[in-house]
Image (cartoon, rainbow, N blue to C red):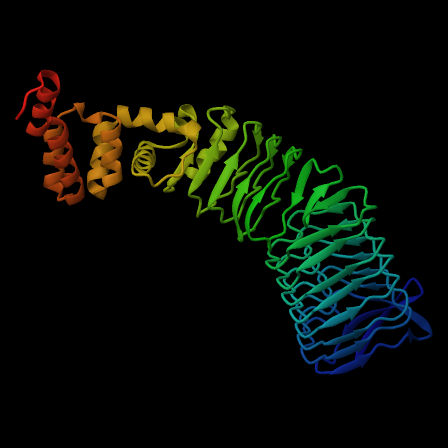
Length: 440
């Protein structure tokens, strides 16, 4: 049984009492009045409903109208619908395809969210606005056709649509909300119409029209990425959730990174330019896998930039850092500085030439602590570094004793050989021979 009400001389469908109906054709009229609206929650949780045919004169579908109709697989739209309300088809898990009428102008937030069987959507020309999270959680959605006309794409509109690989932005679209493509783990390319006045693309990445601002990085792109020269800003949350991105090098013109720009990324390495002077809150995100950082000398001095970078480095075991002494001292605590220097001395770091003086000076100042780490690691390379830099003007016998106590066999053998070669009897005799031309 379907209940109607008459409002302003028009019929409104209020509720459906037949919860077990499998197929339903809603009449075009009620008491000779056109049915123009389906009220909020009218068919909510009609769990057996499989097919529904909407009335010809329908203008609006209310919020949550068909939400939870888990077996609904077919909706036939007719007539003059202008608006689909928020969460109208939320959780319609069996719905595979929808053919929206050309009259629709607004689809409100989460209208088709969690329609997990939905594979293709064609958005009509008259559509102007897609609400927040409108198709979020449609995990099998592979294809979205956005025709000319749409102007606003709400935040999180396609969040979690893991089947999407490419999306085309029409010339009419001028506003894209945050997180619009978050969790689209296979999305590798965003293509923008050349006639769009707000956006452009370069190698599948979304920029503003003049390519001065990087707007959205597709989460499906893997490996490393270098932001091209000429780009001046990284938009808020632009790399959000890009788990496949392993390396990022900012171009030489990047001045600003927005808040949470790298949130949810799993970067292994990052390269920052001297031009970077402004960052938002948690611009560098968390980056749990970060191991390598390159900063050109001490050129980044803005306290806000360094403070945000220090947040992400706190407590992490960074294995590779290239930068100037002041940045080195500010970003890392004592344990991190010692471990990084140990890695440099042992040849485990791929350090840029400009950063070597940072480590050489630190190694001289903290010889005892770093040599203890060398012994602990039983590193021949680290021991050789100290020998090559004339560190053994110190008490080499004491160092041999330390290596012996810790059972660092490789270090011990290297030091004994070094001592014999440089301070032993053979060396003394050879020097006398050279000076006095003696024959031993």
